[in-house]
Image (cartoon, rainbow, N blue to C red; front, side, top):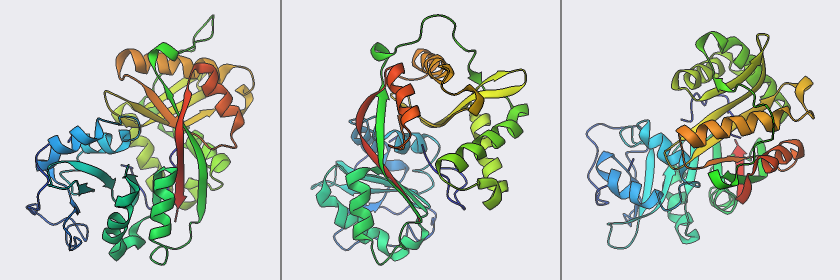
Length: 313
């Protein structure tokens, strides 16, 4: 599950040959600096087809990048790309700070990406991605970044496809999209989850930003709840959405409903809805020490597909 750094408001598809044409308007320091070898550069709207072709090869690992592209990341100049020799194919892409999400399948490209990031590495507040990739970037940027304030090194990545879904027999909870009038309840539930999982209360650090983020999730239809007698029993959020994959975050069951099978039923109901109407597979990553959550996901049919790490600076 994605963690929320203090100034991060919202974590916040892709063709055309990789070239070096500048965008019409500047977008901060990301647009002003490119390594001398030219293999690494900022991507723009003209790169949509090329980017999409590369990222579709791994729809689970790249779901955040593709989701952010749909929300305007290319237009806003928030993606960095590494071109293959010849310049017509993309072999790495990175969503840039304050949330850094790298997709770098070839470790040989870590150094050129790190070199590009160095001039303003202090803007990075949160890095999330494949364990080897994030560890490599953190090491390469050492001296340009402070030590992480919080490191979750082992976060198993789980994936659920329709043929693997196992819904418990009997009744299914009425999981649905959250309504605007449930904002206050969702904010409180989300803050409780963060305190429990991450160790800090976002309402004590950035109440306006946290509330705004939850509001955006509701407005997009990305916040899901199960309520009983006006209280939230279960909630989950979509961190990223594409036709090929949806990544969940913020999965929470009220304390009084735990260890009673309610989380399993609610997750199965939510995934049934998503797989029927929205996507081809559901993914999430979870702290390795959260055995209760892992048990729920595995009972529903999620299977491991790698390991993520999160670095909060």
